[in-house]
Each structure stands twice: as structure tokens, then as C-alpha cells.
Length: 92
Image (cartoon, rainbow, N blue to C red):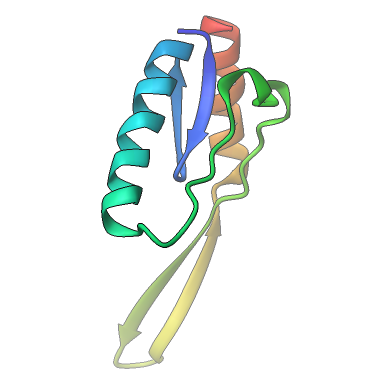
């Protein structure tokens, strides 16, 4: 494991080989389902691993008899960025 990589919203500690395999699978899927659109990705060597920060805000929709429909937002950015930092320390 080299460093965490953000892929489609997931934080995964991937080595270069596993990252490239993931990209190859995504490219095959993309070309099958979206042949009219160009497939874009970032080569592993060009990932700015030290700059990977994620803003993660979840929106929960609720209903209660008192309040009716309402939304609640929770910011998980600090937690996810601590996970990234820990993975960098362990595997970087």
C-alpha cells in the first residue's frame, strides 16, 4: 500500500498496480455504457497525494409529526481527512 487515493468518493489505500487495475475496469465500463463520452482519469504518478483533502457533508432527510419534513446536515470532513492522514502515516 502506498497512499490513500480518492476514487469515486471512496478513500482507499491503493498501490499503483491496484489503482491502474481499478482504472482499467472503470474504463471498460465507461466505454460500454458511454461510448460517446471521453473517459478521463488521473494517472497514479500525477495524483497529488499530499493534497488529497475531502469535504464530506451528509444531508439527512427526516420527518416528524412536530416538524414535518426537514433536513439535517452533518460535516464529516475532519473525520475523513484524519483517516487519510492516518493511512498516509501507516502506508505512505
